Image (cartoon, rainbow, N blue to C red; front, side):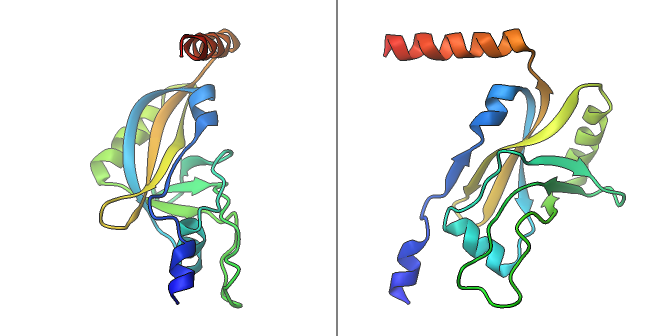
Length: 152
């Protein structure tokens, strides 16, 4: 049992670098995420991919995250989870209304930016209301990054 606990990542903190390159972040929110047993175990191992993930509202007005890839847990049984299932995000009603009103503007989307485990041991996801960058904005981001590397 002690060997199995050593496999888990103690301070899970993963940033979505691709989202930072592709979008300007307007507002950020921290949300809980509804996970099943094998999903949280696979996440604590640090095996997931949120590069293609995005958020949207379903018919019931709930915010869900789509394309968050959590591979099947190796030690799971026949009740293992589906890797790319839609997962519900937990926010307050006020935050959900702000996000719905923000999505009414053309060109805005909701993307996950950061997944972490808080001090209470709960998995949280930081999402952002984002606007897509143009090609010249991406070039400027690359220039700034290269200049910073040269200065260091």
